Image 1 (cartoon, protein in one colour):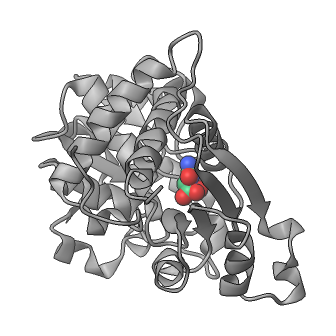
Image 2: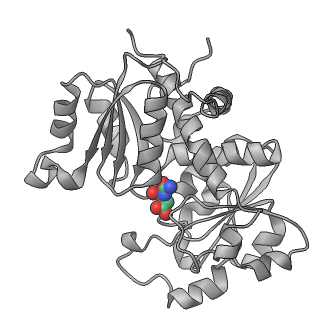
Length: 309
Ligand code: NCD
C-alpha cells in the first residue's frame, strides 16, 4: 500500500509531491463516502484522537472533528480557554496527561510557531498541525489545492495569486509550498508592509498592483487581514486597504476573463472581499469547506495506517 513519507503532518515543507498525490487520491474516495446517505466508514474504530485548540477556530475545528467521526474514531476536544493551561500547566504536561488516556493522534492549533514540531519530539503520538502561529496550516493548503484541482482539473501550470496579509498568514506560507510542489506559479499581492522580506527567496513574485495581479492569474486566494497578530499599524486605514486591495465585482467584471475566487475564512465582508464576489458563481469558498472534511479524513487515515495495532 502507498504510504506517506512523513510520520506527522507538521507542515507542507516536509511533504513531497507523491505525498500530496496520495492524500488527494485518498480524499477523492472519502469525498464519495461523505456524499453517501450513510456518510461514515468504520476504518478508525480503534483510534482515539484529541483535538487541542490553544487558539480560536470555527471551520478547522469542526472540520477535523467531523472528519474524525466519519472515520469512526473516538474523539476528545480541548479548548485552551476552558483548561488548566490558564493555571500554569506546560504544553508537554497538558499533552502527556491527555495521552495517558490512550490517545493515538493529536490535532493541535497553537499560537507559537513550531509548536507541532516541538510536540512531535517530546510526546508519543501522531501530530497534525492545525495552524502554528504565523507559520504553517498544512491541511488548509491541501484543501485549497484539492479545490483548485477539482475546479480546474489540475494545479500544475496554473497561476495563483495570494492577496492580502501575507506576513501574518500561515495559510499563505503553506499554500506557497503546496502550490510550488505541484508545479503552479505563485504571486503574492498586498501592501508592501504585509509582505515578508524573504518572499523572493521562496521563488514567489510580488505584485503590488491588484488589477495587474488579477489580470495575470487563474485563481485569486484572498486572505483576511490578521489584526489580532499586529502590534503596530501596517497600513493607514481599513478604508484605504479596501480601496487598494479589496476585491469587488467591478474589478472582476473589467478583467475580460473569469478567475476563480477562494478564501480560507473567516471572511471580513466588505474589507478584503465584497459579498457579491464571495457569494458569486466564481467563488469556491464553500467548496473549500466541503473538501476540507474529505482532505482531513485522508490525512488522518493515512497517518493512522502507520500506527501499530
Ligand atoms: C485561517 C487560520 O486560522 O489560519 N482560517 C482557517 O483556518 N480557515 C485564516 C484566518 O484566520 O484568517
